[in-house]
Image 1 (spheres, rainbow, N blue to C red):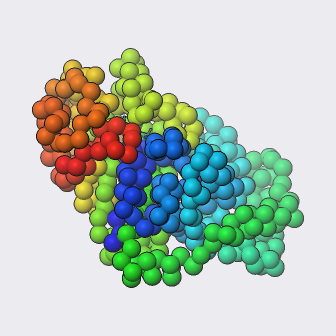
Image 2 (cartoon, rainbow, N blue to C red):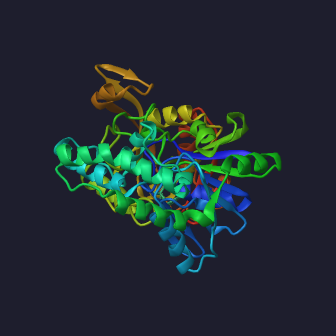
Image 3 (cartoon, protein in one colour):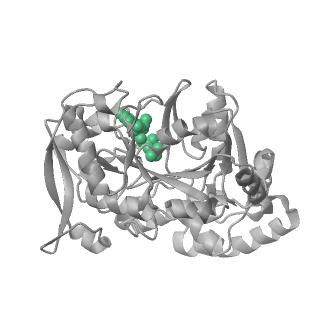
Length: 424
Ligand code: GDP
C-alpha cells in the first residue's frame, strides 16, 4: 500500500510532522524529489530536528528510509544529517539510497550562487543549495548517478568532458576560478566511500516491498505551487512536487499510489519571491509570523522570515486538485486561536473579474484577494483530542474550508507534537 504525503501550496505546511506521525505504521518512507533546499521540522521525544534530506521516518527504527532516484543527493549533507540525529540520541536510522539517484556536485552550489549574483535584483531567491544547476545538468544529461562514482575510468573521462563546458562558463560568464579535474575526481571518490554503505537497486527493492504488501510513504518536499509545471513558474523549484511524480522519483507503478494526503495549513506562508495573493503586511503579519508554526514562521533551511497571509481557498483548492488529493491533513490550526475574526481569501479579482480558478503567473500577479471574514474561536485548542470538543467556530472554520477545497479534511493538527492530532 503506497500513500503520498504532499503539500498544497508553497511548502512548510507541516508535511514533516504528518509523515513522522504516519511513519509509526509504515515500513518504508521515500523522498522522491527535491533536495536539501528545504527542510522539515519535526518535534518528537528525542527533541526538535530540522531535516533537509533525511526522510521523516528516520526517527522510527522499524522504518527503512529511502532516498529515491528523483532526489538531488548532496552526499556530505546526508551524512552530516545522519550523524547529527545519532549524536542527539536517536537510534541510527535505516537509510538506503537508489543507485540511480543523481549526485549534487560541489560546483552546483557555486553555479547557483554565481547565477544569483549575476542576476542581481532579478534573482529567483534561490536557497543556493545548487538545485537549479543540478536539475539542469540532469536533464542536459551531464549529471552523475550514484553508480557512476564507482566506475573509476568512466568517471575520470566524464569529469574531463563535463568540466570542459563548466570551466568555459566559469571563465567567460562568471569570471571565477576554474575547477580542477583531479581535485573533483578525488572528491567524487570520497563521496563514493561516504555513500557506499547505503546504495541499493531501488527498483528491485520497491518491487519486492510492494509485492510483500509493505506500507510505503512517499514524502514530498515543498508544495503544488512550487511545481515547475503547475506552480507559479518561474518562481518554482526545479523538480516536480506532485504525488504523481512519486511514481517516477521512487520508481514504482503509478497505480500503486492509493492515497494522496495533501497537507494544508490553516493560514498561508511562503518563502522566497513570487506571487502571493492573500499576503498580509505590517503589524498584522508580524503577529501571525511570531505566533505561527512552532516558534515562529522562519525558514528551516535559511532562517529567513516567511511571508504570511490569510488562508487562500483558490490556491489551496488548485493545489489539492493538481496533487490528486484523496484526503487533507489540516495543520497549524491552533495558531489562529488569538484572532477575533479570521479573513479567508475566497476569490481573486483579476482585470475586473472575480475568479475561483487559479490563473497563470502574470494574471496571478495582478490578482487582488476577495476576502470573507469568519468568526474566530478565541481559545487555545491544543490538547483537544476529539473533533466534537473543538469550539463551534473552529469547526465552522474547518468545515467552511473543507467545502472550498472540495476534498475531505480527515486529519486536523492542533500542535507541533506527534500526538497533537485529531481524526475527523
Ligand atoms: P514541512 O516542510 O511541510 O514539513 O513544514 P515545516 O516543518 O517547514 O513547517 C511546519 C512548522 O509547523 C514546523 O515548525 C512544525 O513543527 C510546525 N507544526 C506542524 N504542525 C503544527 C501544528 O499543528 N501546530 C503548530 N503550532 N505547529 C505545527
